[in-house]
Length: 124
Image (cartoon, rainbow, N blue to C red; front, top):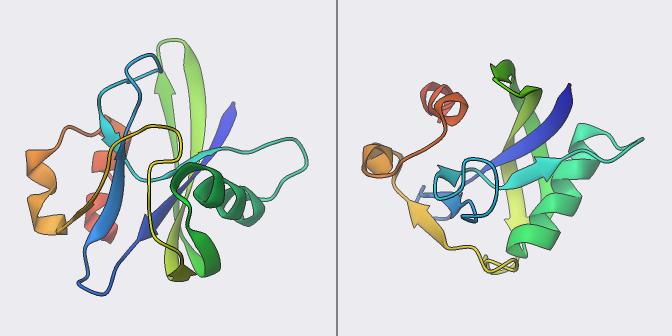
């Protein structure tokens, strides 16, 4: 079981930050909510804080758990911890070369997301 964390991050205009997965990664080219794998001994909140800083230059100030989703791919099982980021600071940028965008949730249908991410739309 791979444990993964994702953050639903809003800006002042109530847009949500999304990032495009690198083409050379699993599900490459699809859009997702920023986050990543938990490291050994790391809590979901600690992983979210670390991943947001490393991936999109966002410093997490406060967040609350939103949901957990377990799902299976043909080659792996994943447990996704999803957090709503209440407060953050910093200017979002794709520090790993990935494209990022602030998107109105009503426009999510214009982007291709992994199936598990689509399950999160009802929480946003």
